[in-house]
Every structure is written in C-alpha cells, then in structure tokens.
Image 1 (cartoon, each protein chain N blue to C red):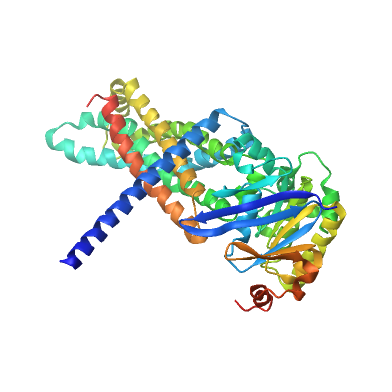
Image 2 (image 1 turned 120 degrees about the horizontal axis):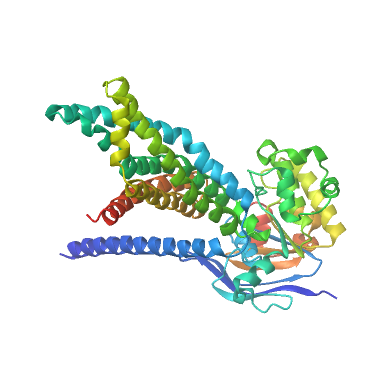
Length: 237
Length: 265
C-alpha cells in the first residue's frame, strides 16, 4: 500500500510574468524514488524549490503529511518544515569558507563523521580540506553526506551527475542508489541523465511546458507513446 | 502625428518603468533593513562569525586606513602652509589639521576605503554564496542566513569603523605634525599645544558617530547587494560594483547631513 507523502495540486509559479509552472499536479509517495525529468528551463528545479519551501508559489497547494498547505506556514514552522529535507544541490553548495568537517557539522553537530565518510567512500583525511581544494565529484559526495547526515524524510537530488565525467557520474549514481536503498528515504531526483532514472528511480514524472506531461513507473518509460517524452529521451528538443 | 504620439507614449512608458523600478528598489531596501534590524535582536547570535568579521573589516583594514590618514595629514599640512604663509597665519596649521582630520577627513576617507575594501568583499562573498545556492543550503540546514551572514557583518561594521577612525585621527594628526616639525621647522611642543588646546570633544565625537553610520552603510549595502545577486559571475561582479558605488554616495550624502546636524549649519 503506497502512502502519500506530498500532494501537489494546481501549482503555479511565474517569474517576471513568465509562467514556469502552470497548474501542475503531482504526488510523491513515502519511501519511493521519484525522478523529475524535462528540458532545461522546464521548471524542474523550480518545482523542487517550491516543494522544499525555498520558493513561494503563486497559487495551488502543496500538502505534506498533515500539513494542508505549506504556503500557509509561518516563518518558524516553515523553518521546521525545511529541516525535513536533505538536498544535494547542483554544484554541491558546500560553504567555501569552512572545512569539510565544519560543513558536515552544520548538518549534525555531535556525531561520528567517520561512518558517513565510509558510506560515501571518502577517507577521513578529507575532513580538514577546504571545498575549493576538492574535485566536483568529491564535493558532490560531501554534499550527499551532508544531506543524509541530518536524517531527512525526503532527499532531493538536483542534477546529481551534472558536470561530472561519465565514470565519476556512474560512481555517484551507484553511491546514491546504495544510500537510498540503505536508508529507505523518499527521494526526488531532478535530472537530465536517463541512466540515473533507470538505475534508482521507481517512478518518473516528465515536465513539459510547466505541466506533468507523463507520469509512470520508470521501467515503463520506453513503452510510453508520449511524443514529447520520446523526443526528450532521443535528445530531440 | 501618429508616430509622434507613439514616441511620446513610449517615452512616458520609459519614465514610468524607471520610476517604478526606483520605488521597487527603495521598497526592497527598506524591507531588507527591517529584516536586518529584526534579526539583530532575534534568534541565534554567532560570536565566532562576528569575531571573524571584526578582524576582516576592522583589523585588516588598519593598514589602508592608516596610510590614507598619514598621507592626508601630511598633504593637509603642506597645503595649509602654502596658503597660510601668504598672510602669516602659519600658527593656525595645527588647528586646521586637527579639525579637518577629526571632523571630516578621517571618517570620510576611512569610510570610502573600507567601502572599497570590505564592502566589496562582503558583496562578492555573499553574492557568490547566493548564486552557488549556499544561502539556500544554509536555510535547509536550519540556519537563518540573516543571523549567520548579515547580522555579524553589520555589527562588526558598526563597531570597527569608530575604532578605525579614532586610530586614523591619531595617525592623521601625526602626519601633519611630522611635516610641520621635520620639513617646515615648527616647534614640536608649540605644535602639539596648539593641537590639543584647540580640539574639542565634539570634534572627535562627531567623527566617531559618522564612522558608526558609515560602518552600517558599508556593511548593509554590501550585504544587500550580495544577497540580491543574480546570475553567475557577472551578477556577482555587478553586485560588488553596486555595493561600492551606493555606499560611497551614501557616505558622502550622510556626511553632509550629519555635519549640518552636529554643527548647526
């Protein structure tokens, strides 16, 4: 029995008069992994930012468990709501001025960091390094560690393989797959990369023109007759 | 006629857009100001970040403020001498140097120097954090960016600028003393006597109050422009430029207002 975690109905968001999301509907279920795919500028990242509370939406509603509409939360409750999410940002978004240890301590103050470093396959010696000394692949691993360290209810991965070469990209995908299965976290992945979709996403939503154009099991994507989705998969925009 | 009307309407539209933009910016600055003031008194305070900013804005600006002050004091003494010697009023040079330095030059020049040095650095740092989603990351890690990024910088600016200006006052007066006694053959004791007899508490105090206000302006504009940076590297560059330009203009403007308030002009 699937348990509804996030329900999005008629969600609209515009920037400077340009409608990015147009009455979008989507459901996210507990312990499932959802991939959101679509062309650049289709509103994928905007959608996740509305879900995790980083952006306010114009109309419609997002409900989360017993919260009816997250837009109605006051700032204190909104802050508490945002802590439910662990986010791996597109460029990892590690704090430049802090060491890796300080970056990780931001997520959880008193804990043994060696365990999480083993999980993301990194040596303990990395703790004293600064993010600028590390490759983007390693930064993403640290970003992932920071996101998971705070025991989130929902893990949001924004383009986890963007900017990585295929080998490192593949390593990150396998790492995410291992961690998601191990921790049984509800995951929302925004991606262009179909390999990530097939590898660890249970369901996929395809966004076209600010709306969900296709939604279904990831393994059924190739059976789909949705023309925009077929074009997207074949790289025809 | 039709074309003239079209051009006229377009012209009016441009004026309307510009005015709307200006009022929007003012509104945004006021809202940002309210948030900043609110979080100075609310939520968590980060003493470590505050101390780090105190060192960055205050201590690290000492060499540049010191150099500016000493050369200003020296040039002021030389220029005053050229003018005053024409009507045998050389004895007024210590008074001119100390008044100019404490009331105007030390606070304004220190303010402009710190705006160029620390204001730009603040805007660039926060702007980079904004465009690389580090500020979003802070929010999701239960850290209020106002408390963590803005408040420590503004408080550090408020506190460190008066100290910088006070040190600048001493160095600037010393610069004038150096030139007068070593180059222009003034009697050192008489020079110092003239300096201390003439300077009043309000002269120094007004400079320190100005420094406080300038410290706020520099850090506030740096934080505001950094926090509202858009796009990539270009956006960060623009936020840095806006921060320095706006703080410099505001420093000169508020300097005039404060001078007329303090000295009833």
